[in-house]
Amino acid sequence: MTTTPPPHETDGDDIALDRALRVGLDEFDLTEEDRALLDIEGFQDEQRTEVVLPVVAIVGRPNVGKSTLVNRILRRREAVVEDVPGVTRDRVAYEAEWSGRRFTIIDTGGWSIDATGIHLRVAEQAEIAVEMADVVLFVVDAKVGATDDDEAVVRMLRRAGKPVILCANKVDDDRFEADAMALWNLGLGEPFAISALHGRGSGDLLDKILELLPEESHVAAAGQEGGPRRVALLGRPNVGKSSLLNKLAGQERVVVDDLAGTTRDPVDELVELGGKPWRFVDTAGIRRRVHQTQGADFYASLRTQAALEKAEVAVVLIDAGTAITEQDIRIVQQVIDAGRALVIVYNKWDTMDEERRYYLEREIERELVQVPWAPRANISARTGRHTDKLLPALETALDSWDQRIPTARLNAFLGEVVAAHPHPVRGGKQPRILFGTQGGTRPPRFVLFASGFLEAGYRRFLERRLREEFGFEGSPIEVSVRVREKRKR
Image (cartoon, rainbow, N blue to C red):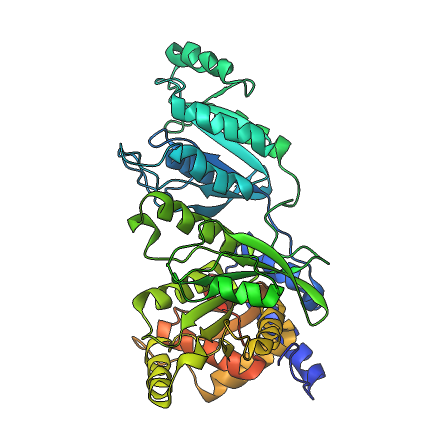
């Protein structure tokens, strides 16, 4: 397993090169954000600690203006806004800034109400977002007033015990101030009269958010220092997630049945592996895209996504006895998109014959070509066969997820790669990489400063070479490029 970069004989040369490249960057137009990134990284960047931004969740029933408020706070049109209830299908996170402080906004939605829907649908959706938030913005349409759905959310917010700011939206001018004040009867304190569309009152609202937000998130950080590592068990219905959790826990903790979809809510279980505690979360089987699910399955999918967001590593179970499906591939991609470490487990291995094993290997080569870096374990959750292989796979993936490459070593490596395989010439110009730095971990994120646009194929080549050199087995890695031009003299 690769936990630290391999020894390098020319560390002194690497540092000299790093210094020279930094000096060379002075010839280019860099933004304040660029310089902040470079200053933070410095020469001791491998010891940098990650700060988890505090989280604000925006909740409310459909069409009260949540996404419009998100765009107002972000000061750009990011969230999709349309005059139709339920346009926001999934929770979406954005990074925002006000008065020099950064925080994360979670925009919620995707719960269009219909006559056959399950009761208190709004409250259930809001509960998922609130669980991950430090502060909650509860948005109500002041022109409509408080509805039964609003009252349901209020009851849930009281149980959650989180700081809540009541936003009376659509107060476009003084004529509607009285409508906003009528929301005092919700019992959540003074309503903030705002117009998300026009910006009225948004500054005072943001000041109040900063007043309540902690410097660092108290709830969103995955795997707090010294605590059990969090593992999410994901997969289609009936692939054996609950059976695996029961086997690892050594008891019948979760209901297991041949009927698919037995598990609805994520089930937490503290399990000891290798002498250390691990927190496993058994989730409901993901059937299809979240916005295509209905009723209880819809909420099961949302809770599964919430479990993934709070996990550090995901174990995706695939039924080895049946063909790999589009849904298996989508679940793997969901883990990558969430930036979590990944282990793929092929369950029910004891039911396979030689012919099926041959075809499974071909399917893996064809269908999971995007994740050759994910550790793999072939097990039988029912009998416990080879479940001992899960622990080293988890440790490998998490080590990679936390791995940081010293900036000097990274730039020496990039220099070697570019010298051997320069970017193709396009339009008479050849982009060159000016400098590279690792912007963060969990997952590892690399930022490359370049003199021109780097094609997607070349970025994939760089990612592949990064994995060959430094490992990163079991972790997605992100490579972003900032194109900077020479300063005009």
